[in-house]
Length: 77
Image 1: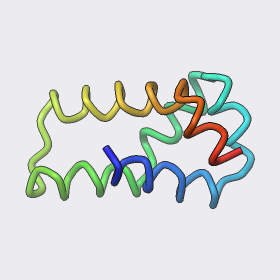
Image 2: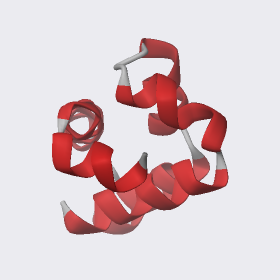
Image 3: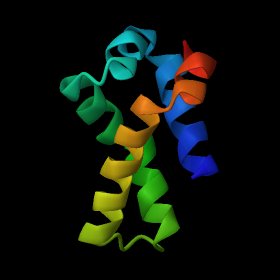
Image 4: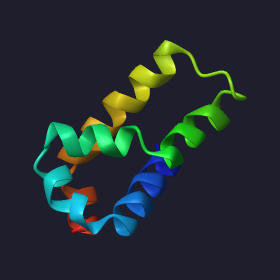
């Protein structure tokens, strides 16, 4: 999960226009973050290039959790 936090934080630091919508749980912003190239690479690397549906489910759920994590939000805001 730490690696995921780092990837999301890095992505948001490079796309500051998404920080506010992300922290409000805006569905479009969350989907943009989830679909980012960096996260797709991340999930592929975690599963030797063969991610499964459950890997993507984990990714989606984890990014949603991050958008509700007060400590994480304070760190990126």
